[in-house]
Image 1: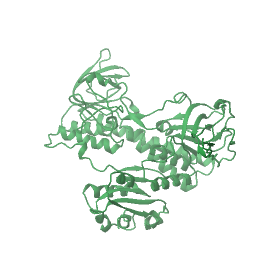
Image 2: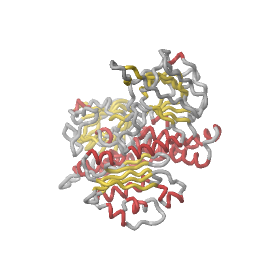
Image 3: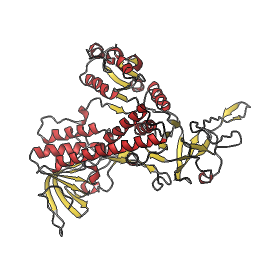
Image 4: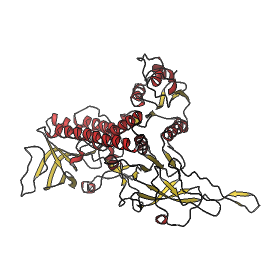
Length: 538
């Protein structure tokens, strides 16, 4: 049996049954923290994890920490000039992957033993599914284990969302973030499908390693939920790193390329209508560092393949035709069809709650329209004594939210007079680890305007911050939204070195209902990035 504790039932020729106080399905941040707390309170706990490679959860193994390890290695490679030649790029990438694997292996082992070594906790490696309201069967390598629990906690996280594109699941060289972070060889060319923040982090990282990166975005607006000035600054930063963008781009099919890479058939709205030539009949890639864009023609505009590795085809075409009164009018947007040849493709089109195979209906657990486990403000599901924590419940997909979900659940189990609820959660910050990190909390200007609030905008160029100059990292901007009459901080957007640290100061001020003048007048150490808040909120 794949059961960790020595006192676990492990009879070779029978199907063991375990009765326990609590069953936690999934080894993520919220679940593992809850398991330790329940054990310390004297409760018997079973933790079921589908894969031994996921002890500790997504963040440790395939999410936050391995990606940040690689991002830091990529930044070092850029600073040292190790991304300048094929040989030094490969060596830097190989070293980065080796270090990432060391870190994740060490953390995975520590997390496993932190739970498995406790007398009250049994860790079972296997995929769980409900067989009744309080019963679960776990399929292990040596056979099924039946578990009956008074309370059950679903903590299965989320999984990459894979769009329905022909060839996307079967073509070698197409990866989710998990696979792309564990390559042995660095791709010289990379196409990223999706320009959300996960995709942009990988674009920035691989550009720093020296990979030629092309990002495909399905619409015309870059980061449509962000303020236009902030989005423009982020895009400019990525383009300065060499990242190329193709907007209004829909991937129609993916297949192996003749040169051993990957070929994508991409339709781009608003450009010249492409020829009817099939993608697989166009010439194979030339091996240039950047993705080749070929084959877009019609009767009015002709475009040719890019021939320089630093060039991308830039095409714009507006067709006009006469109206009934003889005046010109715009025709429907044209569509160009391109073939893109690359070494690897990253599918970064979001993540979806991981509920497949759980048989939740057997326990009376319902899902939302978006496929998440339906929960109330106490994270209770539609079934009695079953809760859902972390990404699987459809909340913000952050490790620290999973940890806060643990607080919501534990406040109900420890006899609190007034449990902590999701509605008590304030001002969730976020950080995106680009070459210049972008962090934000609260409302941006777009959202404040839509809400009809009376506000003022505070701006500060990062170049005006002495510490940023000392660090030779003067790029970026800081922006804050403050309610005009009250001085209440509505939100902040920091595209700045160390923004992922500074944003927590702004969140704390917002949580405490401190006015902007508090940060304006606060005494900070010098030189720091944090002291820029004095000037930002002045």
